[in-house]
Image 1 (spheres, one colour):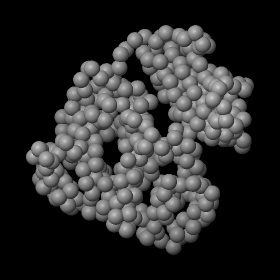
Image 2 (tube, one colour; image 1 turned 45 degrees about the horizontal axis):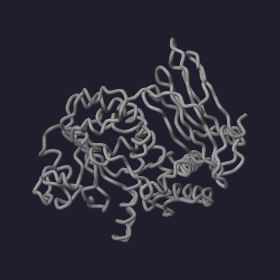
Image 3 (tube, one colour; image 1 turned 135 degrees about the vertical axis):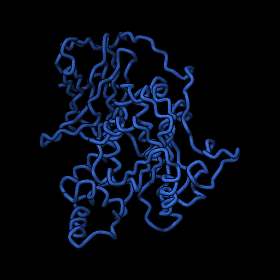
Image 4 (cartoon, one colour; image 1 turned 90 degrees about the horizontal axis):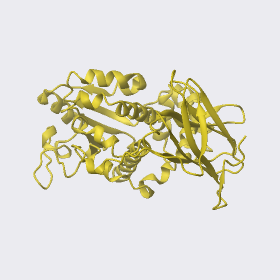
Length: 395
């Protein structure tokens, strides 16, 4: 929804919301960007404000503003993650082609850490946002949406049944819905086989109705889906394979040199699976079946960096980080998820932008029979010092 489409009551609500968040440093200060947060929360001012402020905190903690310029993605993702921008639709919105069915999701997820995979999701979202801003400058009109063509041709249940893929897929949707609201103009899912019903049933509960209303699903009738695409996208902005007139320099109707189309990941990219071993500086923690352990750190200086490194001797473990506002409210920074730290050492960091209590949580509550032994190290780097303080001011 654009700001020009608001009725009188919605305009009043928008004015109130804009006043409430005037202290926020936004990546886009345009009204058409700000209204997205209201639409995502059905014009509930309080809920929209909470959503926006939490997203801004997430951006600062994970250094999202600098990700495109300062982060170098793993080569396996650059070469085999099956998506890219091919052109613009009739509203000047970027058009992404996702060769979903042709992707080797198992190979991708065996070639990069889960953390790098999720960071790449953010990286691609930020690249799209940069493209939208560029188009807005060129056309001198608001461009705050994007169009997706998701090609399911070649979809394999072997890929879809891979648990790590299901987990990152759901987590990616949650991340997008929480931090990039109302960014979709249209989504065309084409060449959808019967197995797609299984895929869609997994993700549908995590999508808002506003998002679901923008999705159109087509089978293998090319005449049907290419006609639908051409209603929204000019032929010169669309590869020949999808009903347009575009080819690449090699004459490829899919424009594979312009957009990554996936394919099998060579095993030479796979991460070496070597069972991790505890390091001398690590602390051990025994976590019984069905239990959790919270480690609390009182941050006394804003913009300190909390760093972690851990492994488990047997089996995976749930891991998450949140902080507690002075009013007692909990704010998640790293969503609790199961990490296969028995296979690879887990490492990461977040920026602690607020001087409050931060909580690192190890979670074995899902395991009814097996206890876990964890080896970990957590340090706090103060922004004014190059010396790390191990478990600084732990409560």
